[in-house]
Image 1 (spheres, rainbow, N blue to C red):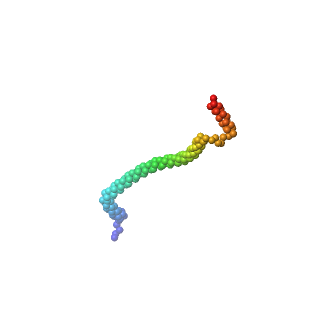
Image 2 (cartoon, rainbow, N blue to C red; image 1 turned 180 degrees about the vertical axis):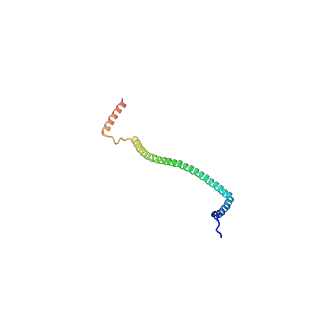
Image 3 (cartoon, rainbow, N blue to C red; image 1 turned 45 degrees about the vertical axis):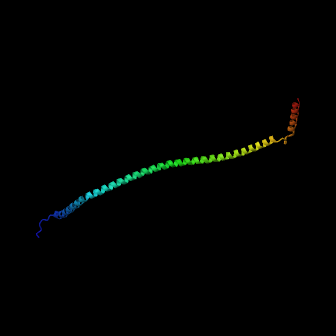
Length: 147
């Protein structure tokens, strides 16, 4: 061992060369797997597009249902208002019907009383002034009939 010149780079170059070879092997393996990864990526991308399409379709369906519900809600509110108005009108009409029944009953009673009064031959219930006037008219009638 005589102590000649030793290249310090030699010990560095050997591990680097080994690392380059290992990296080359890994690159080759990765390039071999690349078509599989690209196919999986393409499949995932198509699946994602399909899911986005389905989401858009459901969103459109939800929007349509929401619009339909809004329209139906407005229609129900309008019908509730109509029912309320009809209930009030029905109550008013029943009240008027009752009033008219009472008035008709009073008129019928009055008609019966007038009919009974006209059918009777007696003049009961006349005031003293009316009896005096009736007597005068009777005398005038007899005078006219005698002439």
